[in-house]
Image 1 (cartoon, helix red, strand yellow):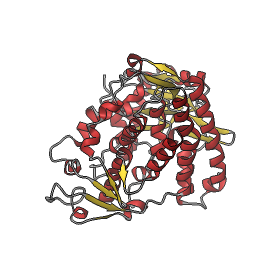
Image 2 (spheres, helix red, strand yellow; image 1 turned 135 degrees about the vertical axis):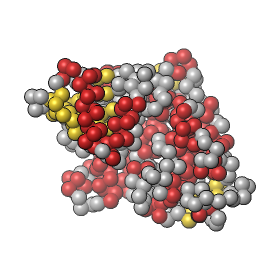
Image 3 (cartoon, helix red, strand yellow; image 1 turned 180 degrees about the vertical axis):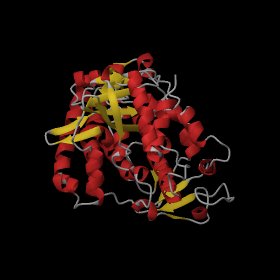
Image 4 (cartoon, rainbow, N blue to C red; image 1 turned 60 degrees about the vertical axis):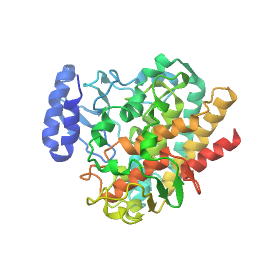
Length: 420
């Protein structure tokens, strides 16, 4: 079975919402006949890159909330372990109804009126006078985020345990990282010989004066470093806890959509929120993104690759500058996750004698997958050339080490290594 039916609905919601809703209603009636569904209302959203959500209206007028994640060519057959998360102590919304079989993965919840953290962060980032940013200040959000990260680390400590290579290989979270990089998603996105990314694979990058040691091809060649079949310490984690999967409530943050929840390496668990909540606003809002608009490329690249066609000397490095300044809310997410989760986690693993010598590379390889494989950077229908360049540069910055200065990420990792 494939999830082609759900993927079609996910894509169609932006072009023909009414037809997408009609198709979805048929799916829900077939999958949950006991519900007597009458209508659905999709909510196309910038955060729904590989998912869709909305309201389900029943014959008795009751409204419920639904969400599903779609993953083409998945090798994971079962999704969603919300019960496991609840038992571990996560504040998570338990679904009322669930279909977890691949191709039919779908969760239905009680309707939640609370905004997602994604929505609040966006409001704080771009419109300080909006009703949402006036209702939830940066200080309010920081308090909630700090508490949530402190609680997350407590859960990590309480659930930390050794995991065999056999059990590790079964973890759903690998679908977000290794299975995308080594599997069909990379080939579908960038595998064609004339794909624009091919021109960049063997080039070295100089970004804001920092020389990055590895090319994209060299980084992709290190995919075995995050192969699933590795015995390691593991935790019970959400797996995909970016801000779009977290509701804000006055008494704390609330997780939902645990499509990739399970027992897995904690460094993988941190990767998605660490990248998407901090560095990925260009991915959700690619049109006229402030960082992308400041990009300057050394000629002749400015008119090549993601723009018009042309032949460029394959030995030439890519020299790029752009404004790296992040909004305060993004820095807050980064500092909270690094200081309250990542740093104590690495120190704890070191003290236990369980820290891999390649922990840094493992994390960076997972982070590489986020800008490179969440969406297709060479899809210029979605990404203007400037946003595509920014995405490719983030892939390099996440995956490669640099000389001549450190990025925000690498400086944080350096600081952790300094206290080990």
